[in-house]
Image (tube, rainbow, N blue to C red; front, side, top):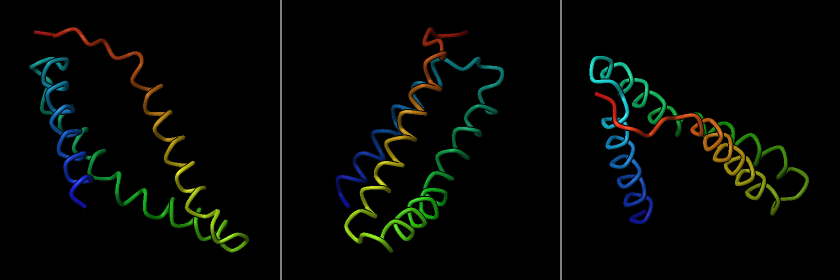
Length: 93
């Protein structure tokens, strides 16, 4: 659990630092709120998606269920990376 806590803390620190640099100051509350909702919803959404994937695939091959769940995670990471490509990283005032 310690590595997960360290990774989550590092992610949140970098996420908030990036958000405060690239989001216009006048609308920063709105974007920070959206970031909090998405970050907070990630766990509750991942549990049913991964659980259903593991349950359905695990019924056929028990060892394949976790691999399919990790495959879903990899797909969502790739989707997130693609959706972040158009973000302009320059600081806005």
